[in-house]
Image 1 (cartoon, rainbow, N blue to C red):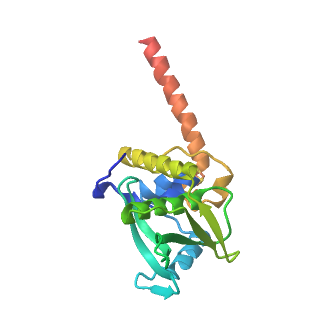
Image 2: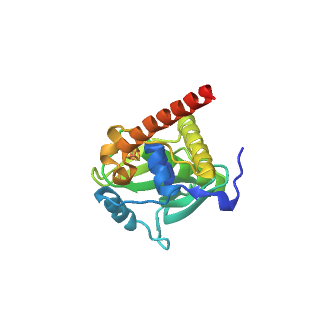
Image 3: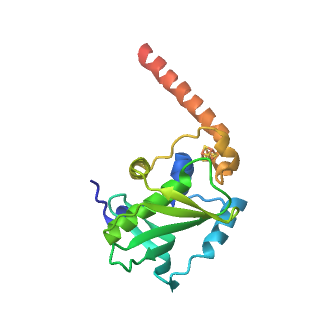
Amino acid sequence: MFNYEEEDLLPLSGIQHFAYCPRQWALIHVEGQWLENASTAQGRIVHHRVDDPYFTETRGSVKTERAIPLISRQLGLFGVADLLEIHEREDGNKTTYSLVEYKRGKPKPDDRDEVQLCAQAICLEEMRNTDIEDGYIFYDMIKNRHRVDFSVILRERVRELALAMHSYYEQALTPVAVKSRKCKNCSMANICLPKLGKLGSKADSYIAGLIRDIETNI
Ligand code: SF4
């Protein structure tokens, strides 16, 4: 089991970028570049509405907290959760926790939102010494909660992504661009230059060929 030091922790929010495209994550978190497009601006507005760290509310047996600080030494991640519902059991049974993450748009065709929420749950489990079975993503376009089951497979995916993020970060590596349909909606497309990435890999093979030729002629 890993146990990262505080100075080695990476932003948890980056896991959604890494799940979408490791190069997108590296451009933002390794190279420190960020381009805002309409999608990311809307995302900030949706989050601003729920990021009030002083907000708590109790309705019946459910207490609600907002902007909850998170940290996991096992994953090596830190961040903030949008909303946490704490269900106190009057029958004395265990308190249960439900995380709720607010997202713009509607459910995505990939798992980037699910891995982010599951990473938050792993942080909270570690911090509060509890087990969390599921959580919810609220999409502003459909105005509905989408339930996420924190399955063994999803947890394993989160651990693998976090491990890969640390590996790239420690080596200060940015993966080469692989052009795909994702590039069309990517907030980093203008600086990623996926076409150049392809040319870049051709150039790499060309240079490798040149070196081979030189070595065989020595
Ligand atoms: S433009 Fe494509 S390859 Fe480049 S970061 Fe975005 S998704 Fe990844």
